[in-house]
Length: 248
Image 1 (spheres, rainbow, N blue to C red):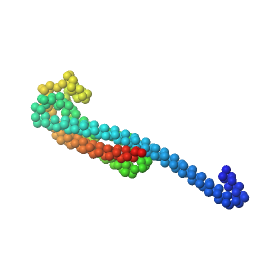
Image 2: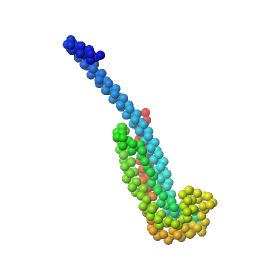
Image 3: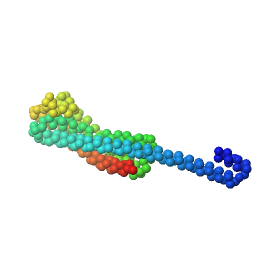
Image 4: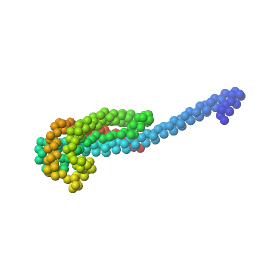
């Protein structure tokens, strides 16, 4: 309609009308672009809010796993220390004989959690990380997951575990191994007598290769414990930062 009038005005050489029509056309185009930009911005902001919520949920899950990892690391350290004490003084197993098989089997269990970083990985792979307007948050997230990945090479190293298990293979019976795996030491069928506990510690004391690995196992779990403390603090700070951005 406007373009039709413009052609008509050109034929009649009505320059004032022509100018007005051109201005109206330009304003209409600019307004259409602006409306589209507003709509794009709104979609981006809604998508950003969705990612922030999902990031927060992901990080809260990480905190739970890190708490579990901290407990696991502490249990592993206690198990290793108990084995070391039993080697030097076998009488300590008499007070809690079932603790010895538990310590022998669990001393090398993994204490570093599996952190998946699903949402952050999605942001990176899709190129949507720039949707997060806070440069500080982007930097903190990148630093957090880069640090975790760096430390995981040490935290997930199972070399000492494999060596320890190879050296100590055969000390525990099949029933004792199953009992530890199923956490059923409280049940009567899998209770360990004092005589059996002393037999186990005697067999273990002869495994010089396993005993030599005990300091490395403590160091490994202590490292994981330290990493989890630091990582948990980072995550909690990021969760607070996200919470601030989500506030209306």
